[in-house]
Image (cartoon, rainbow, N blue to C red):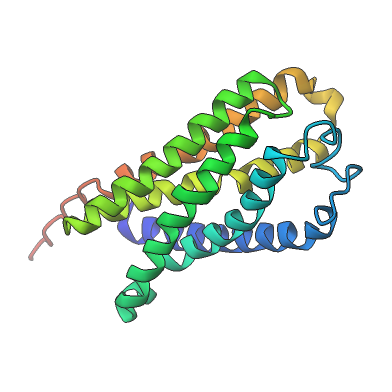
Length: 227
């Protein structure tokens, strides 16, 4: 693929991700009215009144606050212009991101995973996702401390892809609802658990493949023929 085409597609993809992430954050924040006080007739809290109050409630509220903040912070941290223009801001925001995700978002996700509505398969997926996200951020932070900035960027990009799993999950569920469920033979007993894994493994696989494609050596240009 010509370098110009790959660069253009990358920019389009980046802007598409930004728009979708911001859109989902706005939707999540606008739905806070269903959570304070908890409305158990709402989509996410339906059927959770039996175990909501207590540890789950603490984890839930911590997660819905830290999640949107982590997504917005990730967009700013991965912006190369902001990173070059305000490096001090980038460092402090990065530290806050690591503390927020590792200290709040990932632990709250681990707690909520035990009550995953899609069952034990989804529980394992969300536990793995929480640990992987925290691990990527920790490895990225260690790389930055040791001044291995290329490696730092790679780990932080992976972490952001994993953070976007909530965005991907919403898009996939919404797409499935738009398409005729009978045509898909959609059964929540298998569809939802599989989706819990696909929502983060599929985007991560795309990122890894795209990164390797971008690093392929450019084909040597043919020398011009002289008459």
